[in-house]
Length: 273
Image (cartoon, rainbow, N blue to C red; front, side, top):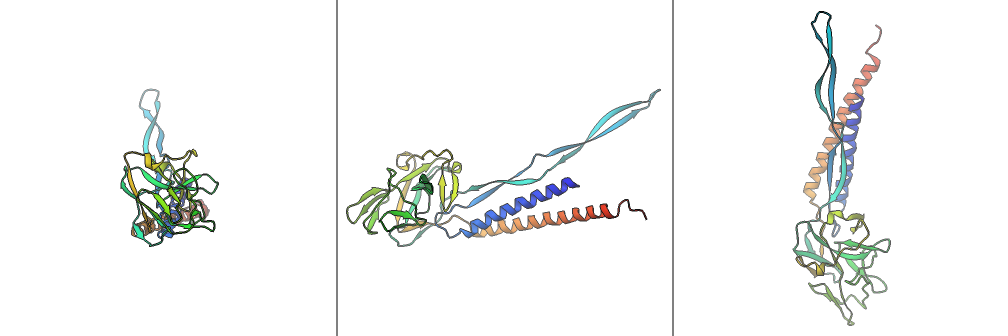
C-alpha cells in the first residue's frame, strides 16, 4: 500500500514538472529565436515480485520442499528525466528594423545548427538564435539583454550609427566605413549545449564552437530586417498541457483512493465490536 503512495506521488511530480516546462514554452511563444523544450519521461526500474511457498510431497515421513512462484513485475513510478530543446528553425518575420538579423538554414545536416556568437553573462562566449539586436550608447551592437555581439574574430562590433548593411554572407558595412563579419558558430550536436536562459546556450566544457564559415558542407545565409520567431507550436503545446493536467488529476484520484483505504484500515479493521 505504501509503495502505491510513492508511485502515485512520482507520477504527480513528473506531470507537474512537465506542466511547468510547457508553461514556459507558451510564455515564450513570441520570443524571437526561442527554442521550445520537449520532455523526456522515464520509468524507474521495475520490481519483480515472487511468492515464496512450500510444497508437500506425500512420502512415508512427509517431505516439504520450498518453492517460489513469479507474481509479475511492478512499476516503481516515473520521472521527467530532462527537458530537451528542439532546434528546428522558427518562422522568419520581417520587422524592417535595421539592427534585426536572422540566420536562415539553407543546407543543414539534420542534427546541426548555427548560432550568433555573443559575450555571455560571465564574459565567456555564448550562442543564440535571437537576432533582435540594437546599438548601445557607445555604438556597440548588442542583444536586447545588453550582451555584446561578436564578429568572426571574437571581438565586439562598434558602429557610428544604425545606418549599416549586412549581406547574406554576414559581412557588415557601416556608413562611416566600418566593416566586420558577424560571428556565426556551428554545432554539429546542439543537444550537447546547455540552455542558460534568455535564449542563450553555452558548451558544456567551455570550449568555443567552430566557425560556421569554415564548416564546409553546410549552407546558411543572413537576412537583415528580419528575426527568427519562436519554434513553439502553440496548438500542440496547449494539447500537451491538457494531457498533463488530466494525467495529474488521474494520479490525484488514485492517491485519494489509497488515502481512503488507509483510513479504513486504521479505523475499522480490527476494531472490537
